[in-house]
Image 1 (cartoon, rainbow, N blue to C red):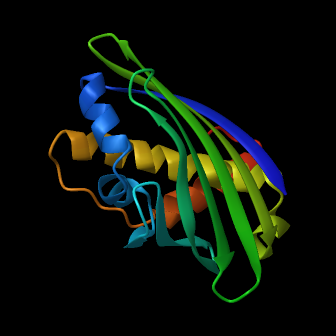
Image 2: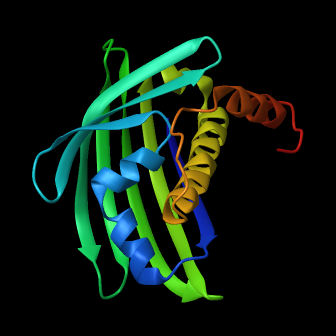
Image 3: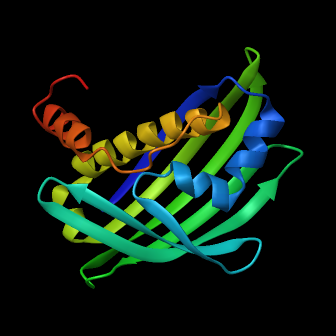
Length: 175
């Protein structure tokens, strides 16, 4: 199952501060719901774990994230992540392209994510996986902005809100 998601968000911080934070694995992983960093392999590669819960279904992935590109001059980056379900029931891969630009006294961040899911989670179908990914990304954005503002970040996955959003999407309601 494949899905492509394109999102943009505004951060009320200077572009250099946003860039320094978003390209630092130790800082950014705290913003990703359900994720933790387990090992820094080198400057461009690191290992981590992420746990997702969709109602009664829980999936835990262990994997590797790699910076394929980090260009501080153009404020663009490319990342690839791949992981395997710890129970051996599937896997996931993410290709992420991001670019940043100064806008309205802050920074506009634009992201395109290509997500591939195999196994148990793929059974939910692309619409529900896209809705869930979108919800996780929205929670990431809130955490990221909070972190830049010096607030405490809670990276636990807000599964109840995500499931409600997915159910509304499934039945054609607004999110």
